[in-house]
Image (tube, rainbow, N blue to C red; front, side, top):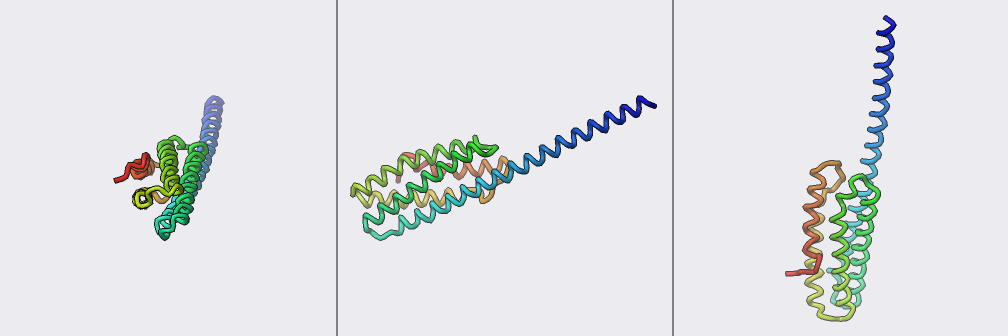
Length: 176
């Protein structure tokens, strides 16, 4: 009888210990999920800001200076999104999933710099306008395919990588 009591007490203590570990694990997962969702929400906000600034750059009148300023604002937003993705890589649980998208935005930033430089140096403006318009179209496709909210699932990251495919054509400014 004493052996049964000890066994029952040990089983009870083991179950309590397992329950505590599971509660801590669930709490940690919930906190990680909330953190990931907040970072992704911030990223989406940055992307929507880029879209707004890009729309303004495309809609500027034909004044070269105002177009160059608007294009510089777009470049600043592209750099900011790259920095946001870098932060997401370092601060979220699935940071490695953002690595290729971060690299795409870095390449876009470098190639877009040459477009801004051409506009500032008053080179072929019609070519710059075509490239700017194409960039706007690709950005809209990117936004359309992006998941609207963060989910901790494979489907979320599949959609994210699908959306990333729209940034890739801009990488070296290979425009039609």
